[in-house]
Image (cartoon, rainbow, N blue to C red):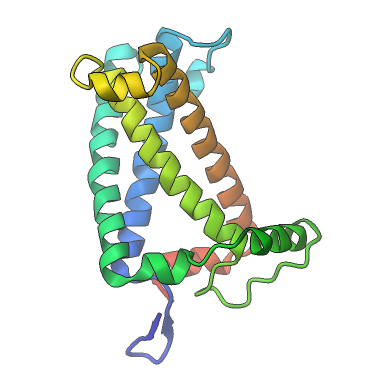
Length: 201
């Protein structure tokens, strides 16, 4: 966080805002094309409504999925690299203490958790952001097993085989969708956070 030329506080630097919105695009495409791919060979006894899917058919969905996969992969690498290089990873997300998470969670559920300082994350936010970063890494790794099972035998065995990797990939996707839903609700409750992610200030 630093003062801008106009004297206002920069909360989110430009590189962070760009990677955030690229991730939004990648995740949207991955989820909806992934639902179309899932429908071609369901793991569980249900399918997603066709109107909620992207790609038109299995081949089209795979093309959308692979394109978004590379966007997420390289954008994610850049995001993690910049967070480490700039020290933002430690300043924003650490320390993370269990008691702090419990305290802030109780405040959130009782409507007493305030968002006065947008440049600081509370413990629940820290946990959520760390969890989604790890979840996205798990999605990429399990996706590699589903996509190139023969080429990644050790990773496949680590995940308990091809079928188990599909289940892991599905639940990682489910956690991602839940995160996005809660994230959007929180933005609706505190709209200043959207302005900060658009303008940086």
